[in-house]
Structure formats: structure tokens, C-alpha cells
Image 1 (cartoon, rainbow, N blue to C red):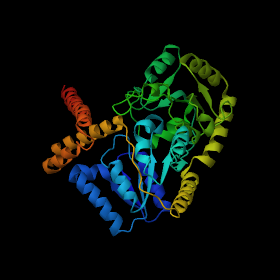
Image 2 (image 1 turned 60 degrees about the horizontal axis):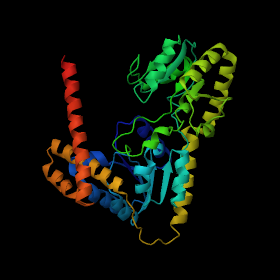
Image 3 (image 1 turned 180 degrees about the vertical axis):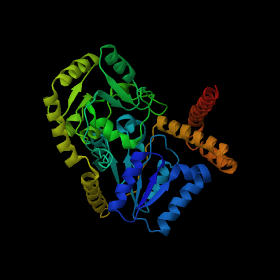
Image 4 (image 1 turned 90 degrees about the vertical axis):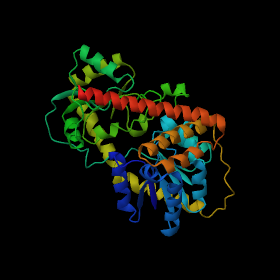
Length: 400
């Protein structure tokens, strides 16, 4: 198996890869972004094809982020002629309509973390596996401790309206401890998470999507969409009670009112915090039930073998069938986003003094015509400029 990924700095992806290695002993890891920024797009494509032939790769699992356009849909279609192709998609609730469905149209199978996107994949005739939240129970586990934190939140406090909720609680006398980007206590080591959650009487979980970005900014209805409620499982595995912002798929993970409770606005949140702080026994009973469900459903020794078994069944059936050549459908917006992403990669190559590969990539920017080039190149150039300005601003602030 060849596992294509985008970054070695994502703790969760590193955990997932380690779990795959436990069950699949012959897995080769390949960082497509790092290789592209050193050796260019053409060498990236050639190296992957050579690896498939030389090492007799049976399956390629690609796990891209929605910012990754280094490998085109057309390339994956050609790759599929040589080996099985599986996409492991992330954040489908935010990027299915603008990214995932276009790449996945050429896949033999897709693994998705978003419950509702599963039905969308099926609508397009794409074999799909729903990936239940899988949490590292070596990092999240009950720690015997005094419950000395009334309410805690771990995550980015700057995302969407989270800061407004947190400030509202503080103004109304709630003792809340926050951890993570933009928080009161700042970042914490991953080894501290289980202890913090175990000390907390109530753990908050916010589920609105972050503000729309350059990839999905033309889909304003996404402002009404909620994230998967999977982060709830982290607190559940520490036997901590979770009060979560309502999201439609939460009832797949837990029974609302018995294993978890939800809020729809800041006033309901305040009311329920006061209620559960005053009712220790009810809160702890719900936390215990949540733990029992999470430990039997959301840990890797349960979820990973199940996914691999489903994948084996899908690929086994596909191999018995004969397919005609896949016709590829791409929207104008996808094409422009693709050029936008590749433009950013081109400037990274220039920064790395890989001018030959940068020029090679520049020619690829015209693959979807001049009008898509103009729109995509402009967007990518603006992002590069903003990135440089932000870096200069941070350096200036540190110098002060």
C-alpha cells in the first residue's frame, strides 16, 4: 500500500498512520507536498508511478487536505489504471461540494468522516465508508483527579463566534478555563489533555464551521452547516461530561440527554451550565455512559479493522468487474481553485530556488484555459502576498 499524505506535522494523521501500520505491515508513506516543493510536479507524478511499478503497489490511499492540488484529478485517473485508488477525505462537511467530490469521482472507494456526505457520495455512485471518530485512547483516558475546573474549552477560541460565547459566560459569572489558540491559558502539551479534561466538570464543544476560505467562499450556505461532533469522543474517553453545540449527526455518536447534552444558543448554554454544575450525580452518570459507549465504538482497535474489512470487500468486488474509461467532470470553480493552489506551489518553488520546476509548473497553470488561468493565478498571487505580509508583521511584532 502506498499512503499519500500532505504533512508530517499533523498529530492526528501521524496517529492514524501508526494505527494503519499495526494492521497493514507493508505500507509505504509518501509526502506529496514536501516532494513537490523540492522536485516539482512532473517529478512528483513520475516518482509515484515508478514506485507503483517497482514495488508492485496494490492500493494507493490518498489523504489530501482541500488545499492540495499538486496531483490533478486527471493524474489520479491514470493512476487508477495501474492500482486500486482510495481517498481518505477530511472535513467533507466544509469541502465536499468544492473539492472532495471532484477528486473522488475517479476513486475505487472513499473514506469520509462526515455522515451526511456519505449519502452524497452514494448519489454519485462512489463506494464510500463512513469513518467513525477514532480517538487515541493512549492520549485520552480517565485520570483520577479532583474536579476543580467548572467549565473548560480546548481549541481555537478565535474560530467563528466562540470568543463571544466564552465572554458571555465570563460576564455571567461562569468560571471557565480555555486552552488553545487565542485562549486564556494558551497552548498545552498533548500529554496534558487527559488531565485537563478529567479535572473538568463540564467540557464545551463548539461545532460551527470556521469562516469560509478561498476554497469554499463561493458557497455561503456553508455558514449554516455544522462540523461533525467527533471531538466529543475525546472528553467521553476521559469520563468527562460534554455540553456540545448542536450538530445533526451528534445522535449517531451519543444519545442526547443521556450521554451528552446540547445547546443551540448562548442563553441555553448558560442555563444548562448552571443546571449541570448544580447536579453532580446526573452529570457524572451521563459521563459514565458516554465513556462506555466511546470505549467500545471510537477507539482504533475497533474502528480501523472495521474500515479495512469494508475496504477489502469493496475493492474485492470492484476487481471482479470491468470498467470503461472514466469521464471526468470538473466545475469552473474547481478549475480556478486548482490553478490558485498550484500558483501558491509555484511561488514556494521560487522561494526554494527551484526555478526550473517553478517554470515547469507555470506552464501547467494554463491547463484549463486562459480565463481560468487569470482568475486562479490572481487568487494564488493574492494569497502569496498576504502570506508574506503576515510573516513580516509577525517578525516586526517579535522585534518590538
